[in-house]
Length: 106
Image (cartoon, rainbow, N blue to C red; front, side):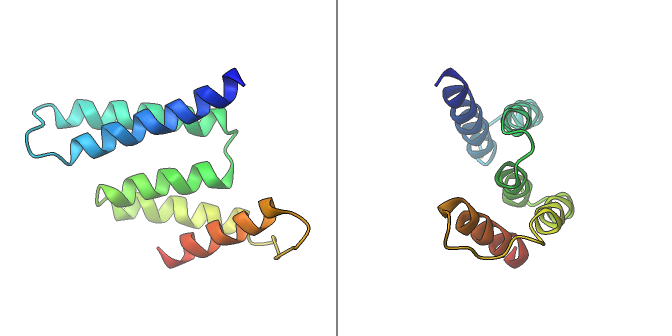
């Protein structure tokens, strides 16, 4: 339970900093960017490099307009999930299919 809170908190704090960066009134934009990605990479580590975590990092780069970095992470998601086929056995596999589709679309 503690680990789940840490994972969720890291993602939420990282996203909060990302949204703060987009505000025009932010003076220390570079510092906020570093802090945001520090929390996002902590989330990535806590999720053990899951495809969902990689996709969220790609979306963060895409959100900031750093498409070349986002492209690298989207390709990683697609390559990790290449062999996953749709299965009715588990919602987890269906979620992976959705993540792969979204990564390919972006």
